[in-house]
Image (cartoon, rainbow, N blue to C red; front, side, top):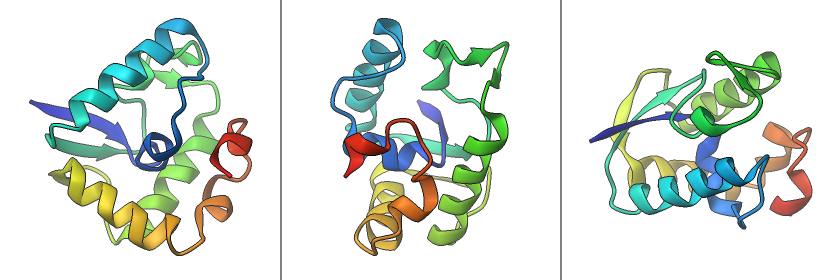
Length: 121
């Protein structure tokens, strides 16, 4: 199975604590986290994905904060040397995010304006 993943969600999964926009969203995040732990292929996106499917901010496939989160996605892809629609194994993507963003101290410059920023510090 190949999962559709927004590029910035590569950071979100590193800090997820069971809090979210709604119960349905949080439950889906846990399920996605379990699925990704199996190291499936993922296709990287700058638009709604399999995580967003249960988000209350997703309106018919478009995020309420479309420009803000698409910018997060573009920054993650750029910093990791990737592009939209690239396909790779989850752990490979996770390692790139860790190396080029999280360990490099760039997370807050990418998504410091996110409402969940405090959970990621």
